[in-house]
Length: 212
Image (cartoon, rainbow, N blue to C red):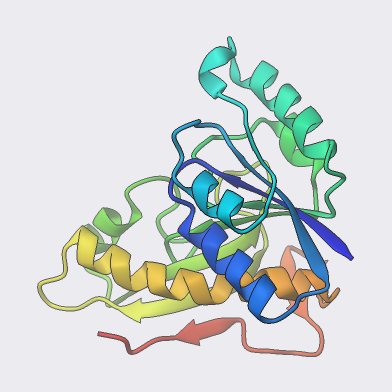
């Protein structure tokens, strides 16, 4: 059975989507723990209510990123995970951390990478005048928001959109593609070749939503 640790910083809606999919679809996996770097993160209550162990490691208690990440690795590894899932974990990770979990560390980013890495992606999309925006699940590498892409979902950018309305439409698709990507990992369907993620047997890795 695949052991999964999920990292959050806030409400953890993508974590919720993954937990619900795992329970509803009876995945051959266990969510071993949900860990937050913020004790006030709302997602901790959801995890507890679903019988999932939780832990808090407050980054504000550490002098630098390296010391925090080293302790975080110790905490994560105590659960012996096969997969670590970043679900709104608002920390830039050190190279040592990323290398430690190479090939088993997933993240979701609210843009159609390689477009709009970093923060404020919805504002960036509107300023650029693109007709489509979306989200990407990818393996994490040391290059921020540039790891091999597992699956993407696109949504139309509509006249009158604001960053908030666009974010809501993108988030709805995030809740579709992140559980799917995690399930592919659990079922050993993912491989990486020349920085490209392959799904076997093949399945669509770009979903297009017309949701308005």
